[in-house]
Image (cartoon, rainbow, N blue to C red; front, side, top):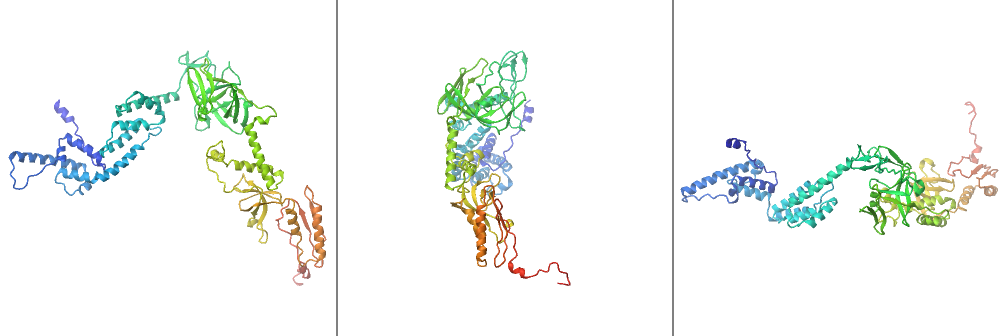
Length: 620
């Protein structure tokens, strides 16, 4: 039996040097101590000087030490790579090899101090990550602590225990408090702490698995949550799987519990539900503000789906106090109203359920809701929807005050730039655009636009509403001698493209452009500017025109003014003939672009020449 055990004994392998001297020296020291050779590394041996007298006993002892030293050198040669051995100048004894390796890779006192400082910083900044296991985090902390001990740091167990307790994730907070209150940290070992945390971690994992694979039984005679009239119990006559809410990655689905109580089908009942991911209401009349463009899908545990047809706000009257519930989903197919406990907590509320009573605390107002648990283990609120009285807009204080603020701004802008009131809608759009990019008390340190889009908006493109703007005309839409720009009025920014929205008073059309020169201090003269521009365009007689021609032009210009109507006037300039026999026939229509190309008129001096059109080749 002894021979068999000796044959089956596996010799320990020699640790190979991998560049980490602290770890390799620890393994190598343990290996050599097991062989009883470590004394040759610590002390070594000294050969006697030449000619010195040596006794037989000393000679035999010296030979034994040399033999052991050769074995240690053999181990070191096997552990250290050839390229490293070639850099060691003296290899006569094992102590010389060990000391050389120590000087090369462990460094002097200054190097040790620098490495120790790095390790201290790493130790202090260690934090347990979300989802990280307790065993992995302990291994990370102990690795750093072991390196610090190797480099001379006095690392006590209590220091490591305190570090671990203060760097755990939030889900271990109550466990840390329990350990600090019930146990003495000074005598608590690292292994005891690790085993305690592992047990609690296993409970977390088990609880999570039970939530994913929930199975309950029910009795047909009871009432409760679910599609049918039943309440879930620990035991029952027939075992079936419960209806639970599930997520489908292919759809946008919200978790919720389906409540259907036949004995309490009241519109003013609201159920506090921890399984509902959002406030939901099935009565459209309870909303005082509703965005019906919002769409979402709700999937129930029985694999049925409901459509969310809007999201808005509901005012509830509880115990004489009015409460505003925001972000409420409108689900017409829902038969009962649901208040999400999770959404209340996101708003800063604190929910306390104890001794059959549910209390909801507001961070500023304290206790705002309190209700007792019903017989079927549910918390129900009896609340009435708070609506406004007919023809009393002052009851909508916040909304009406906002409307008043915007209309005051609109009135000021239209008056400042003398813009007709028909442009009030464009002014409102610009006001809303600006206010969404301004700070507000409702959102701290951010603008509404940044909260909605997640991008900090820029205000570099802001210009004065209603100012004069010179819009550049592209080369493709004008000739070389025509004006390069047209004078317009700024109405804001375009919703369809990245450009400004402007109004051309000459053509009465909306223009969108980004190549603009603004005159923010000027405004358009709606009574004079267009008339003067027309007269300047007609009075072109110059030096070559006679008095009769100029008189005819002036009379026709007056006719244009007198014949202008609200529906769009039309004037004809005829009969302008003088000594130069000039003939002009110009038609002006309101709404026609004045920048269109004019009809080319043949000069009078060309009438003395014959073009030759219609003659045969012999005649020409």
